[in-house]
Image (cartoon, rainbow, N blue to C red; front, side, top):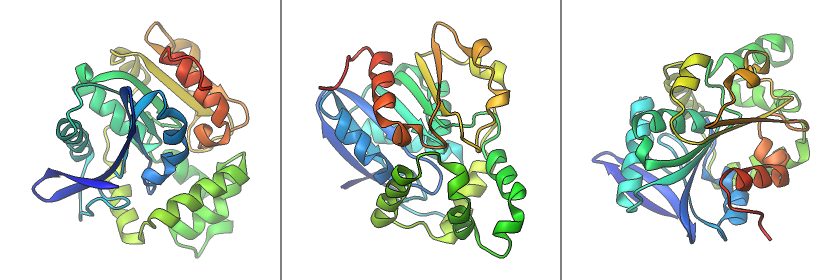
Length: 265
């Protein structure tokens, strides 16, 4: 793990492995780059894979406040410091929002965009609804404790998801204060309408969701209306909020088909 200074008061922790066209993986809220260890190891034989801790997470600099523009600037600076002219971007959860907003501003630096379990239309609404629906079960618990209780509702393949979360916590555990700051920043991310998503698709874009993901309102995701020449949408039948982990083989196959890279041997 190395660090790069993206501004005078901010350092970003990252790992860079493999050879080939650059691929940058961006994790979600209260997560860290360990969430992409397994995917990195699968894809580094084909791509040069970069994973990193976004601002306020993992071993990158913590701040009292930040916003989507800071995340976008960090990604731009990271690419500049690593001499990456353009890359494939994959974002999970909040990481997809960062990748999408970056692409809207710097499309020439993005070879393709993949959004995994990303709620483009209401970034925190799904979690809020889940907590309200199960308020009797989580009453009196803080957010981190509540998420443990709600775990069976969020993920379908629970053994795979549990190991995935444990790997992240071994690497770095988010404090309640850092989580609150990151959540406030996410709540202030600009929301996108379905029309805006379609109109701003200017690079090949793949969207993958889990059928059983309570944090994304699939009823409002009209896949037929948003699919097009530059946009492909899949719903994984046996996944919740982490389809790239819960159905890893299916994800890798779909991703390599999307990027025209064939299948990993």
